[in-house]
Every structure is written in structure tokens, then in C-alpha cells.
Length: 176
Length: 415
Ligand SMILES: [Fe+2]
Image (cartoon, rainbow over all chains, first blue to last red; front, side, top):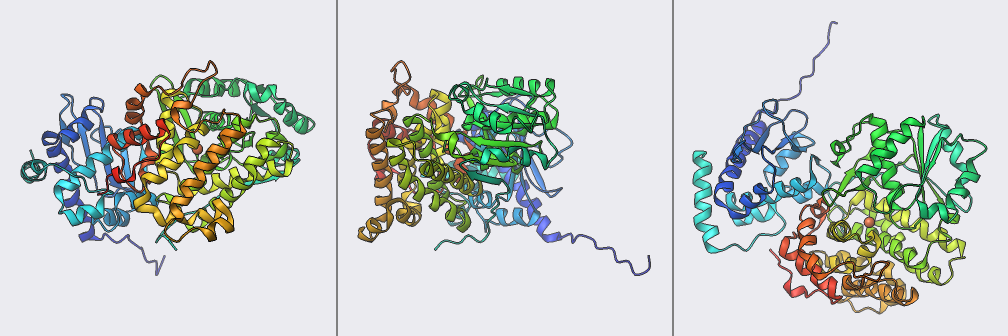
């Protein structure tokens, strides 16, 4: 096989690095919000014990897993899909689409409307997961950025915008 | 004019429409090599003699293994499982589904089970869970409404959990849709009205919601035009077979449109009213459609205005002042509902509190509204709705639709 050139998929190192970092931040922020925010708490309470969901890219792109452990405590569970069963998977069809989503150049609703996502699992919990991520994005992002990511910027109390946000950000940073 | 940066459109269903299209059934099944279908229908369709018309049309060329009319109006997981067992026992190799939305969706459910050789339907819920082609399925719609004959979706109830499961996959598309004017001759007036309003909701939501695209628009607008033209005359004169064929085609067009651009909050809420209070889907759509438009008005005014031409025709369109076409579109839909109420002698309800069951009991008691709102929070169709909808929003819309008063648009929360 003289002259055979093996074509390797480009690794797109920085793109993947960005996704890894963003997913870790998002995962830890969801864990934090589940401790601080009443609405997020309520959404998780409605999920069964040991329920897990993931956000990732097809086929084996970066991902993150969130779930309730046996005591019902919400935890960011890293990215190893083999380690635990994942009940609800939200998968972007390619790493590039995932990048658009997590750089907020394409909002979640638009990304979904353009058929970039595959949702497998219980639809009601998928709705809950999206609501949770919407709230967490409002905590994490400045207003103008969050507005690009979600449909409607919520009218929160002053405390939720300041004190609760500070709590979520600190917990996200420290990872507890 | 709105052109999205990216969109997808497809309709691989072979559509055969006419006054004698059923005679093509055997030819269509011969392509994948099937000749031993199960004929699936419901009691009403069978009593109306429609199953016999189909049997007559195919009996010389197909070996019908079983005729099963046990699909209830609100079919669920259990029924699907039982019928799938029957399919296997009788050695069928395909399905001819003759009926309305419930029969067609049940057939899709059965087809998932028998093709994947399992009895657990839940693993296929959501979007895109199926991975390969299913066995042959032919859809023969007997209502002009659901468009299930051309859609990638199937909605099957889970009565234990009081919830409607939604399945979405390109593999759920039937191999062929046979649209035959004989199938809608005996449809009772109020069912014709309600199912046509379901088609209307598909077309209008396809034009307004997030996944709208130019190709689905073209189908949807033609569907709207045909429904406006033929529905009311057909209620008075169902013998008009051109009208019937045209309306059945409108349902298919609307089905193609919404299969490619999906629907939004009207369907999310309609599914919830349906599963909590067991209201037929078409009735929910007729009542809720105008409210979905009002709720999304601030984000979609231009899109709502854009369908006025199809809804009202050129004269009214030309006469409508430039500032009001969107409101006029909503008014047109409400007027059509009122006209249908008249034409069906009050059987076509225009608000939730007027919905009555056979014993004349109200179907949607006001105490149920919170439960409906809660259920709607778990419906995936809201992903495609332009504006976000939370529990209070659902309740606000429900209360207005219950009373039958227009939504106070100033109360809709905008980001
Ligand atoms: Fe519908």
C-alpha cells in the first residue's frame, strides 16, 4: 500500500479544551444551584432517586453527567458514561454544534429547533433538565449573554440576583 | 421574509390520493414483499363499514391474517402490547391501519414492538430513539385531521401515569398513505370539524413556531387555504367528494408541514388537556390554537400576519389595515370556531368549560386546570415554542381558554 495516506480526524485541541472547561463549570454550577436555588431544588426533587442525565456531543465528544446519588443529593459526576447508568441523554450531533451551543452563538431553543440534538429518555425530565440549565445559565452569565442563551430572561428578586448568585458562583469555583 | 440559517425537510411517504386509491394497497405492499397484513382499525370505523371497503379493495390479492378492531379512542401502552402479541401469533408481516389518529399511532406503536422484537415501548420514547427501518405499514386515514399518515410522531398514552408518551423518528413514517375520499364520507359533523381544526393547528403552528422553514410554510399555507375553503361547506354537504378529498389532502399537507417544523405550545397544552381530562385532541386544538398565537404574539407578530392571506383570502387581506393583519389572523380562527359551533348545532365547543361528554357532564372542571398546567410543564413540544412558558403562564392561558375570553396580551411576561 505505497502512497496510502491515513486521514486522521483533526483533534481540534482548543475547541475540545474549551468544551471540557465549560462542561466542568456547568456541571459544578448545577450541583451548586441544586443546593442554593429553590426552583432547581424543586426540579431535582421531582426526579426519581439515582436519576442521572448527561449533556454531550456525538459520538464520543466531551460530556458531563449530573445525577442524584443514593441519598438524593445532586452531584456532578464527571464524564465517564461507563461508570454509572445514564437515564437521560441530551446529545449534540457534532462537536461543532456543541461548541456553538456552549459559546452561546446558537441558543438552546434554536439549536433544538435546527435538529442539532438527540434526546433519549423521559421527555418530562428532559424538560426539567432544560429548565435547570436555563436557571444555571442565568446565574453564571452576564445578562446580555444569558439573553442569547435562553428564551426569556427571568424577573428574579434582588436577593436571587445577588446573594444567591454569589453563593452559586463561589460553590462552583470551589466545587462543593 | 424569514429564512433560517439551517433547516431540514423531507417527506418520504408515498402518497396515493383519489376516489379509489385503496385499490393500490396490494401493489404498494408488494414492493417490500409483504402479502399477509394485519388490518387494524377501531369499532366505530368498522361499524361505519369503512373496514369492509378496504377489505373489498384488497381481498383478491392479499391474505389478510387478521382484522382487529380493538383500538380504543385513547389507545395506550397496554393495548399496543396486546396487539403486538396478536400480530406475532397470527404471523402477520405488515400492518394496514384504517382509522383516525389513535389507530395510526397504535399501529406505529405495534410496528416498533414487532420490528424490534421487544415488548418494552418506553425505550423508544423521545426523539430519534429508533435506529433502523421498521416493517411495512400502510396508513389509511378516516378523519381529515391528525396527519399521522405523514408524520414522524406517534402519541401513545400511558394511563397508569396519566401522561402521553411522544415518539419521534423518521422510521415511524408509514410506507404509504392512502387518501381515499370514501373514507371520510360518514364522518359525523362535529368530528369532521374538530379533526380539521387539528390539521389547522398543525399548519398554523408550523408557520409560527421555532422550526418554521420555507418548505414547511408552503405546505402549511396550502393546507390552511383548503381548510378555510372546504370545511364549512362540507359540514352542510358531506356528499361533496371533491371537497372531502381536498380536505383530506389539507390534513396530509398540514401533517407534512408539522412533521418538518414541529409544533409548539398549542400542542403541548392540548396533549395535557387530553391526557388529564380525556378530551379528544381535535377539540383541544380548536379551542387552544388562538391562545397559542396570542401568547407568542410579541415574538411572532410578523409570522402570524403572514398567514392571513391563506386564512382570509385576497379580498380581506387587501382590506386589512397594515397594523392589524396578525390580530386579524387570530380573529379569523376564532370566527371559524364560532361558525363551526353554529354549523354543528352547538357540538363544536369554543371554550374549555363548554366541553361536554356523552352524558352532558363538563369534561374540564375548573379545578383540573392546575393539574393540566403541571402536566404541560413536561411536554417536549414547548421546546419549539418561541416564548418560554412556566407554570403560571400555562395557568393564565388555561383560565382564558376555559372562559373563552381573549388572552390579555399585556399580562404575558416578556423577558
Ligand atoms: Fe395535532
